[in-house]
Picture 1 (tube, rainbow, N blue to C red):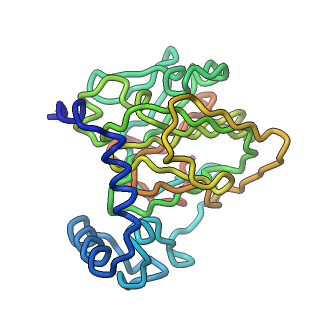
Picture 2 (cartoon, rainbow, N blue to C red; picture 1 turned 135 degrees about the vertical axis):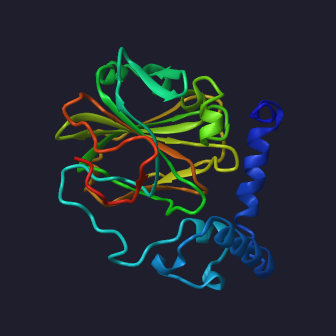
Length: 270
């Protein structure tokens, strides 16, 4: 049942969660963090800071760094950018992406009508969902030169499987950040999708992008800044978790992913 998501003040609640996640009161932040660790089975032994008390606030814990060697970067040209679970992956057919259970959306809608959308009309996609227990930093899946970034305002529905099976155009209607990279495979798009309570995203080159929440598409051009990121380097993070979508320009680079598969950052994908 997702009807309640249509009537709640999605952005207002997300703003409250944003503030709550930065409360430094020891009892509040420690109690909530302990509850999350126990409820979702967070593996703190991988974290640089294993003790909950060492985190400044909940978001500090949520965006925690891992110990060196906790993830091994694969040898292939494309690796998995996040820890999570594959929602869907496969070929893009007739400029349309499969969402879940009789629900589809177009590449153009996902990219906010960007003129480059047609480069992915016969490409390949992968949608990966990050749960509360996962590591929430996002890493580069390939070597790439940053071309541009678009912030696209929208709703903040949940992105769990139940909602994906119920809400039309879910990933194309939620707030999102689209990053375009020039790679050895051609132009690739990397989409960070916001969700209820988790509508805050940031990148290593721009810092925190939202909040504040905007009402119009914001375009950022980086063609003259020579921003080059290597495979495995951190490219951003969710301040609270959500979903990433990878778009490849053709189907020669089919990724070794299937729906329901659990992923770990650094794994070889081709």
